[in-house]
Image 1: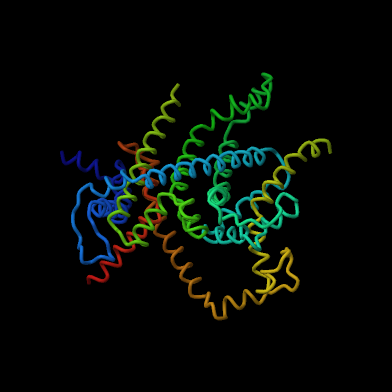
Image 2: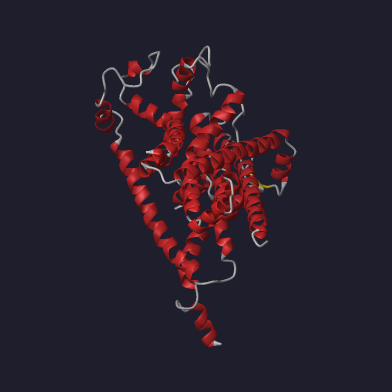
Length: 299
Length: 132
């Protein structure tokens, strides 16, 4: 018995002490806030109405959310925005990785240029983009007008439809380098012999891509897109400096909605309920996506 | 030579993609070197007429007091990286050396990567501070 316990805790045979600091830290900084959010989401707690006090209301906040058509539209918008951004990031990132994986000159120089959007802090990048998109003095307007594609200046962030795509493009811009780097590492990890034997067997470049490269890269693609979806879903740092969720609510994704409720209207209860919805949605998505994609691996 | 020419489309494509990616960064650098009036001139200039290097000096020493936020950022990022390495290093060792139940589930904490949550932690710390 004593021997067994010693085995459990010995640093040579058990991971216990290596994981303990992380678990303590995460417990304090993650599990506690989530627990508190969960509690907050079941209270009526409006900071601007101290006369109402803090009352426990059970699931009323969630019921109010799910009965509101606006909230469902926000969910749809969030999913749409995330899908557009992640698909764009993955495709463009893959193209860049595919090009950079060839034996070309100046590879390191290209890699250096590629990393610039990534090392630009999110908010700094977003502010630069806001200037690019500016309706009066924006460089994008100038470029399009020089190319005769646009007759007069257009406020890209001032219209509902264009703002939706413009913010998604900024998010893509910020995420492409990460995707490209991960995919590049994935492509380069594929053994040379496999590609050579595919060549010898007479595979066309498309066949080589579909039947050799993509299947071998599947685990990397799954993990990279999953992380990217989680980050994009919570892409507060891009949208807030660009549009603050506007115009009207065109770019108001769930995280912006939660922030506005909590720190704009100071309705902590409803804000916490929205955050819990985000949390549970992502948790569910991660579990399903990971399981589903990795199970197919065994075929 | 022929081989080099064969790679030319690859280079061209990379240049097209990268120039689109670097467009806002170039705008940022070019704007940072302009005078206030030139920023709002139409048509915009790529290379400023008279390059204002003193913008950087003004930001650091002038009325914007950039040095304080800068050192705050340096402090926060170094402490964050230090703590991350400190906590993650043994955990990574555990994940790579041992196999145990629930190993793959440790990935899941990425879900909590949200700014609002961080804001709440912040408020929580602030509220502890005010209760003391």
